[in-house]
Image (cartoon, rainbow, N blue to C red):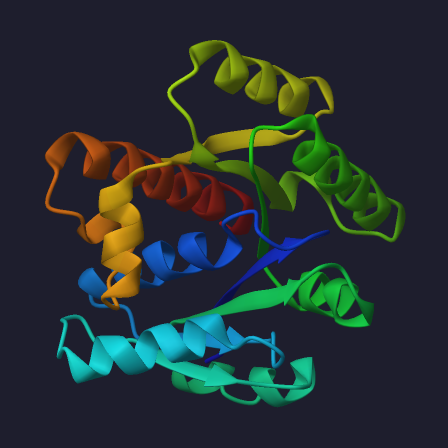
Length: 213
């Protein structure tokens, strides 16, 4: 039986893509899913290196992460897992469409600025033009500051473009520290910060189940 497949892609780097991938993987693994992350960014391999630190620190649950140069090679591992998550290249390339075509659900993370959101919306529109069902896509916000007006403007921009907004990961020192130590954003020790991330993951899971059932 093949895995459920989630693709996390972006038009540009620095939008919190890998942070989201890690939080997703940890949450599903906590719920007894076997999870593998396909790290498609061979230039940086940030998620692969993050997992090396995670293993050194012996954090539970353990996450399988492997770098790949080709989508088809990552897909060969799908039958061995409940969930395969593509951590796409930090910038849309020829593999982005391949990842989206292979995925059951697609997530496009962005920071709140229009400079980050606009390229992601354009990428989403291009994917729709190439046959990707808009219902299988959602947006998330990353590195969200304390400004309510910035956050609300970003959410409105996503919704006006016609896409589902799932939630956010805040800009917090504790989250950065977690990731530096090989943990995910939903492993912070601060309950209120963790609650926001948990809500995001729950919304993604609910929408994922809705479009794949």
